[in-house]
Length: 366
Ligand SMILES: [Zn+2]
Image 1 (cartoon, protein in one colour):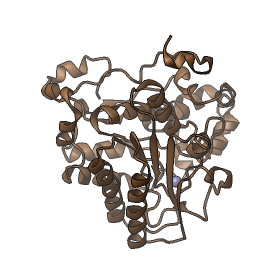
Image 2 (cartoon, protein in one colour):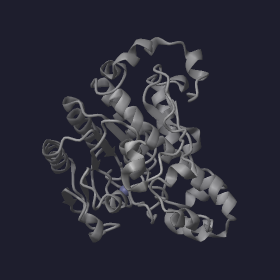
Image 3 (cartoon, protein in one colour):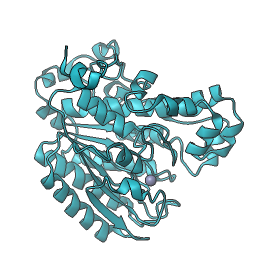
Image 4 (spheres, helix red, strand yellow):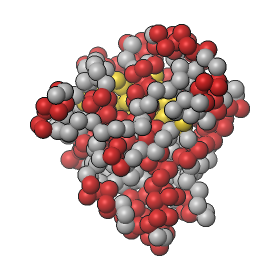
């Protein structure tokens, strides 16, 4: 009997497709064309660029940083995967179009039969959720990983909201705790403009998880109960600009990582801090966002702590370009890329494996 089966009579871990081997020739950048929400123009009714994930990938290809063959194709999280965190009651509620319309803030979904809501909205979000869980394992294996989607930080085990239907951050951490030897603590650095009340509620009583959250104090969700889970809380005022913001991010990320050295960092890199964002209410420049991401990756890499980045909120038309530019900057700075793979150990030996091997493997690259 394994240790897991002993603890509290818990069942042993279910079978999952999300931890399948990834060819060493792939970069730990996770994406699927399934991420993008397109359906009869419905996506235009939300103040979201619901195709931003695909655009990030297109820009990265144009800059010749990636090709379809060397990124990792995300898989949809199955019901059994979701049940690692979510209650059956919550997943059943998503079978009501009204509930999904409320969570995603797309009211017309209310009038659609649920099978269409599942296929056109929830499946993309489940695929992004699968991507975050996959990227968690990749981050441990390779030292870093980026899910081009995910970051649904308002969703907790029993409640969705603010466009977040699945608790991908909580799931990624719980999968690691359950399945990966040597991963027993995590730090969430949540730099989206909104408070990350979903993972905060999920880890309220869990001392293994240290949460740092930097957000606009005046906007959604203002969840006072969830705030009790934040170890390092940085509340910002309307219109906060680059110099103050970057100084605080630098100071507090250093402080957080000095206070508790985790086995993994989950970096929620929301870009709704961008000046002009209709929801975020802050005034950070594109250059400020790029610098911010660099600060966090540098802090993680310097300490040798694996880092998983998810892209979270931020859906202005120019957002995708900024995310792509930031990823390119991380590469230019030597913080991600093949040189970063050098620290990954023996798997690097097979880095130059032929592409035909990777495309025939369990996890196909797109
Ligand atoms: Zn946000």
